Length: 150
Ligand SMILES: [Zn+2]
Image 1 (cartoon, rainbow, N blue to C red):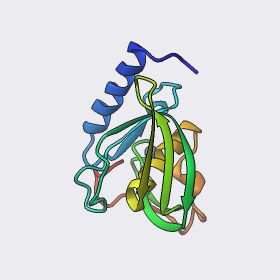
Image 2: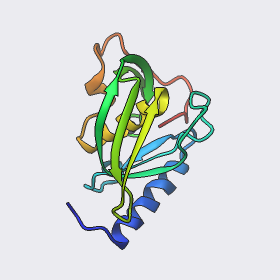
Image 3: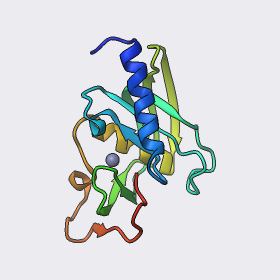
C-alpha cells in the first residue's frame, strides 16, 4: 500500500474534480484516471434514486464488510460511455474504508447508493459492468441520452 500524504490528498481532489466535470456522475475510481491506487470517490447527492445520500465520500482501501439481498439495476460507466447495462448487485451493504488522513470509517448504504459504491469498488479490481452482466446480448444497451454518465 502506498503511504498517506499529499499525493493521496491530491488524487482525492483530482477524482472529485473529474467526477464533477461529467453530468450526473455519481462516482469514479483511481484506475479510471490512470492511478493504481485503491481509492474511489462517490457522491449521490441530489440523485433522484438516493433520497438519503451520505454525500461526497472518498474511500481509500474500501472493503465490503457485509451485504444482503440482490436486485438488478441499470448502470452506466465513465469508462464505457456508449452503453448502459443491467447488473445484479446486493441491495444493502456495509463498507469499511479509510479517509485520506488514514482514519477508519464505516458506511451502510442501500439501493442505488450501495450500487454506486460496489461499482466503484469493482474498478479497483479491474472489473467493469460488462464483466458483471448475465448476457452481453440481453443486458447491454446503447446509450439513449448522450452525456448521461457515471
Ligand atoms: Zn465505472
